[in-house]
Each structure stands twice: as structure tokens, then as C-alpha cells.
Image (tube, rainbow, N blue to C red; front, side, top):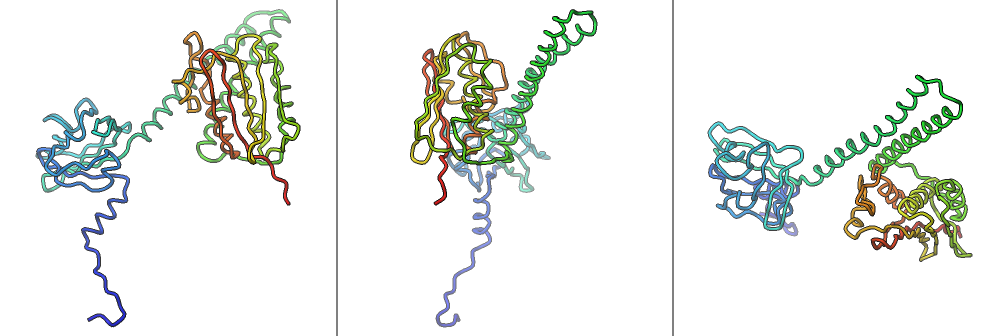
Length: 363
């Protein structure tokens, strides 16, 4: 008998405790019989596929389609599920890229593992495979793009070096080739820098040195650096007289502006002006870089700041480069506490606008 004033509660059963534990996992489990019909399920099945398969239903009717390693995963006598549930069945796991299936809520990428049970049933473990696939696809893109971007300048450097070694060239020719080799080496350096910057942003190891900074001073340095690349274009800079100091990392703000201004020149017709203006808004400073170039199609704008994305120019050709520039710009702006956006109409130019915090003098 419980003492007066003491509240006695029943201890949770082992089954309910286990169900609660399984519900907190990222992986769901569906147990099916030898015919592929659902016996029971546990874990976040609703979150993965948008529904809980009914007991007695065919799992292949809930997870439709899906093939891996040359065979269907869930449906048919030759499926991986049928093989796992047959006498002497063996465990099977889907490839790292997962399996594409269709459910009532739409397409899904699932990681699948099949494990035969002593009862003759099969445990089907399901997990979200979309993130891992995205990582693998990014890895493939990195290998493909960097191998191509590395090969181009290396081939040029090698060819010019062979000419200088094999032939008695005049002073003017040697000087010209030396300049070309230097420019190709700079291209390689830029490629390596972009890869390292993207890696540091992804891992959260990008160093940051925030200091009160005058936007006018950073812009002056950037414009001087890009003077030879402006190709005679007129650059207008409009800053308010009462522009506050920015609380930013000078080098990273400079990198953001160099990238945006370089793109503005690259995608603009010869002689088209480029404009930079800034304004103060609620403790933030908004900086806009506007060009009158080819613009960006609406379908391209959504993926513009994603890794390894290269848009097509007016002639339908993909621009050279790693596709990391705007990804890095977005990462640097956000690292400094701001945000970036783009507004553009195809054929009518683009405006890239980003915000960074203004510096507040200590009281």
C-alpha cells in the first residue's frame, strides 16, 4: 500500500519504451512476411514516406518502382525483397546513392537494408537517402569540374614551356610566353583558392576577423585591383554621405565585391556600365551591384548560389569556371551576418544585393 502523499505511477512496459526509443531514430523499420505483406512498422515511417503502410498491405504497393543493382527492390519474385525472404535468404543493402521510389506523397530517395529474421519474415530498414546522394553528386561534380579546369591551364603551360625549351625564341616571344604562363598559373591558383574556401565554409573552419570598416576604402581598393579588367567600362559608385562603418572582415568583403564586379563585367556587353550603390537600413548596410548584361533566366536564379552551378550565356554555352564563386560569396556574406539576393530579367541585366551589419560605436 502506498504511503499517504505519495503518487504511484505504473512503470512503462518494455514494449512501449522500445516503441518510444524507435520513434526517435532516423531510421524506420517495416517487418514483412514471406509474401511481402506488412506485419508491423516502427520508427519515423510517416516522416520518410508520408504515410504508415497498413498491416496486411503489400509493401511494394506503398513503395512503388525502385531498382538497384539490376533488379527491382520490392516487387516481383526476382526482387531483392523476395530473395531476402526466401529460404536461406541473405541480407541486402542498397548502394550509397539510395533507391528512387514513388509514394503517394511524391518521389523519395531512400536508403534500404533488408535483413532476414529467424521467423521467416524480413526486416526492411528505411532511411532518408537524399542528403547522402546530394553529397555524392557534389563530389562527382567537384572531380569532373576541377579535372577539366585544371587540365586546361596545365596543358597551356606545358605547351608553352616545351616551345621555350625546344626553340631559340626571340626576346619578345619569350616575354609573351612567360606572361601567358604566369596568367595560366594565376588561373590555377584561383581554382585552388576557390576549392579551399568552399571546403572551409562547409566545415565551419573559415577564419573571421570582424573590424569597423569604411565601405568607401574597400571599394577603392577593389576598383584599383580590377582596373585592367574593366575593359573601358564606366563604373559608378553612389554612397550616402552619412554611410556608417561596417562591422565586417575587410578581406572577405573585398572578395565578395571582386566576385560580383567581375561577374558584372563578364556578363555585360562591351562598354556597358556597372553601378554600385549602398544604403543604410535598420542597423544593416545594403550594397547593390548592378549591370546591364545578359541577365539570368528565372529557372536559373533558384540554383545560382548553389555549389558547382554554372549558368548558360546568351549563346547557350556554359561559362568556364568551377561554379563555386557565388556559392562562396553567399557563404562569406552569411558568415559576416548578412544575406544576399539577386533580381534579374533575361536580357535586361542583373542586380546582386547583399547586406552586412553596420558598426555600432560602444556607448
